[in-house]
Image 1 (cartoon, helix red, strand yellow):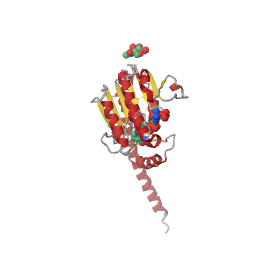
Image 2 (cartoon, helix red, strand yellow):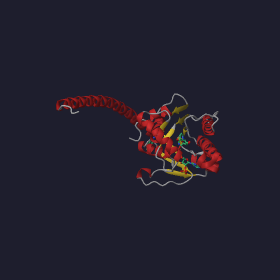
Image 3 (tube, helix red, strand yellow):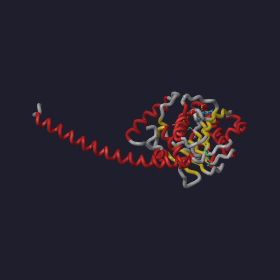
Image 4 (cartoon, helix red, strand yellow):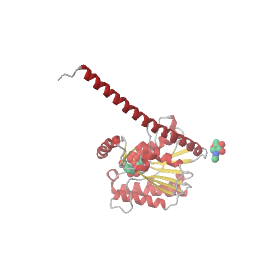
Length: 276
Ligand SMILES: NC(=O)c1ccc[n+]([C@@H]2O[C@H](COP(=O)([O-])OP(=O)(O)OC[C@H]3O[C@@H](n4cnc5c(N)ncnc54)[C@H](OP(=O)(O)O)[C@@H]3O)[C@@H](O)[C@H]2O)c1
Ligand SMILES: *[C@@H]1O[C@H](CO)[C@@H](O)[C@H](O)[C@H]1NC(C)=O
């Protein structure tokens, strides 16, 4: 069937009108949202300025990992610490000039007690350390995710550190039947008992990242959640830059309690707009 030209013209005109109205509505909401982010960003700038004046220092555990690297980049971008020390098992090299003032302490995590000095004199500690059972075996996983993390926190506390930020995991629970969640929950609780002035636990869901090393199972899970989060933000997953941004931003905020637990949704809120 052939439609008369006038009918085609009318239909096209109507369609165009609908699209224009739709675009205008979208634009309106988009604008409203960006205004909100703008004022949030301005508040952040003020908080960053105030924080910067105190010449605080921090250390990062796991700065060679995916979250740690993103956190380091975020912190450097804000320039809120007068000294940043990376504590790890190997020396890292950076090309970028922004990284030239970093300090590094290479330690043997099996003999951390001998490296107490590396943990001395930092105000804030960030821990993004971790391995998997697949990489390190059950025993190795417990050594890293529990023993190394706890010992580091202890040494930091003894060394004068007043606030500790721990990247844990969604579902962490010391009473869990799953080894992974149980270990995460145990170390969370044991660090709380150390009595930092301030202690923040981050429990992200599946981390969305283009990982440097290949982990096929994780890749599949990521593709799955990635597809979802494109449609709506899921409570199950989060981009790695958002976790980093949340950890850095939260450092500047005043918590209501000494210990705070940030679930995936809280991290998502604090980390909005990261990596853009
Ligand atoms: N993957 C997820 O979806 C997910 C979800 C929720 C929570 N988490 C948790 O989030 C944390 C960070 O995850 P991520 O994916 O960012 O970590 P990642 O990329 O695997 O990095 C792990 C970091 O830990 C260090 N590390 C590992 N084994 C070590 C050992 N034996 N001795 C010393 N250092 C060691 C690594 O140092 P080297 O570079 O020297 O190896 C690296 O800096 C972990 O605790 C993880 O359990 C992960
Ligand atoms: C921070 O360092 C600057 C420059 O070195 C100094 O002028 C200032 O007094 C220091 N502030 C504090 C709170 O120590």
